[in-house]
Image (cartoon, rainbow, N blue to C red):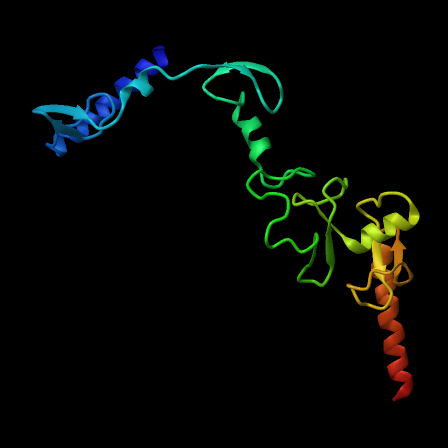
Length: 195
């Protein structure tokens, strides 16, 4: 209560400074302009809500914890954010519905040329719930999840060709880059031998 009183006193001081510069009548509580109704000056804001905020009691719809506070359905802003975040993995956002008009079957092509597929429950999915299709195909083939350091290489160079015959798994980025360097050297040697 003391904090609220200090805050109100601070607001009154700021309002009084402003009133010296602006002669129009203002509310002493909130600083809003007063309007004239039947020869009386009345604040345009409703102070009943400001003075006595409603205290809700109940169980949070997100975490199930009992709370007493100003939130109607949720105990904290964190719980509200978890419920209304549009990028919850595996759950549909209430505003987007099951199949929006722009749904393309859970696939899209990135600017580098990789195909992304919608697998929101996958442990390596992005915050939007998508993973690269070539990594998913390789995981299905070997029967386990890939680690972050493992790289999947496209043998024919076509990033959209994700058949298992076209994919090769490297244990790390270093071996993958050495392979690319080896290919460049082979092409260079071949071109030098022709000329």
